[in-house]
Image (cartoon, rainbow, N blue to C red; front, side):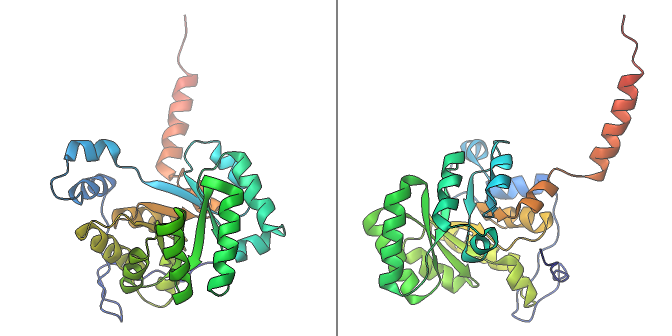
Length: 267
């Protein structure tokens, strides 16, 4: 995986006028999720039901199987690039992921309206309820999204979102998910997390059910900040998910406890 350039500095304003929000603690993150609940919502109920979803962004079925068995993975996203790197037929990959037990698999379609809708219909019929059809943020893509979401009752994921304006159109088309690309926005000196926050806030104000699925995640920090900024779902490579387990103080604490445990005398 290619290393990303240094992320924009928090607190500064990027060239598009977005202010990069400062760091917060994990406790503040949870409180923010509760605070952002819709007006009139039962805050205690929101606290119980708040769930931050983790998707894996990969076509590596061996990694998916290993991590899905942890019980921590809620879905999988794929794209043509990931499928190509796997060297396998797309439908073989989708079938294997389904067999593993994953209930939400993003399957991307490409082409014009007729080509995308034809392929989307075929995939949704073949893979059933596990299929989330992923369409690009284009005019034809939104036409397909509108037909699938509002007429056919198929989950949709509008990808390649880079602005709140695009997210509004995708929501109007009935998208289940919109996928803002945090890393690629950061590459252009645009605060990707601020775009996530803007979309989430728009959806909250207008009570839009479309979920924000933060994509192009290149660090644990960007994943956590995505949830803080309102994303319901973060999709990440297996390498980033693995890093979520780690902290140097956890390692040091474990080392101390193991040493002390070995010195305990048992009668």
